[in-house]
Amino acid sequence: MKATRLFPARRAFASIAALTLAAGATAQLGSAQLSMDAPAKPRAYVVYAAEPQSVPAARRAVLELRFQIVPGFHINSHTPKSELLIPTTLTLEPATGVKPGAPVYPAGQPYSFPSVPGEKLDVYAGNFIIRLPVVATPGDHTMDAALKYQACDNASCYPPKTLPVKILFTAK
Image (cartoon, rainbow, N blue to C red; front, side, top):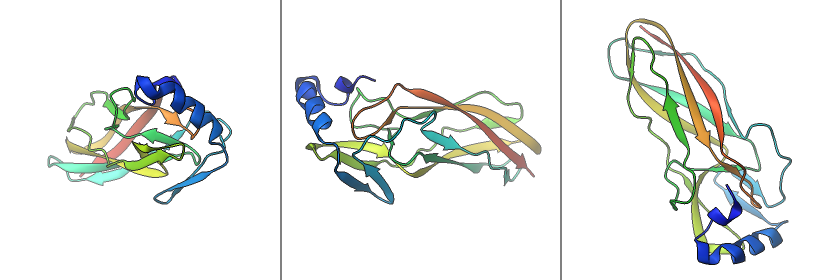
């Protein structure tokens, strides 16, 4: 995403210039520290580790998908404050014996850049959990999914990425 998409078009140029000059300050977001210094650009901004889970068979259950955002970065929440921002979304592939419900996303954390304190973004930083309701037949299951997100630091946003997610669970 180009930086001009971060704020309404009329203030985009001024906001970009202010963000460029804002290096060096820090902001606290819950337990996640966001540094104004641009961190080194990692290959992936969000990490997911497949954790086997167990749920009751043939009954509604909820899987917890745990994600961690690389320190120094944040991503837009599922419900960003502007239609110009790219929301975080989880897309599921069909899986035999599993009927998934709609993913339940956590609330984002309000965040504003020191250079533009009146603009509040809704972001995830640090760790976050997406809850996935499922009804599954007895046995071991693997579901393929993809987490689409856009990572930003306090100076700029990067092109959207898609993280492959393999969900492993057993229905007993």
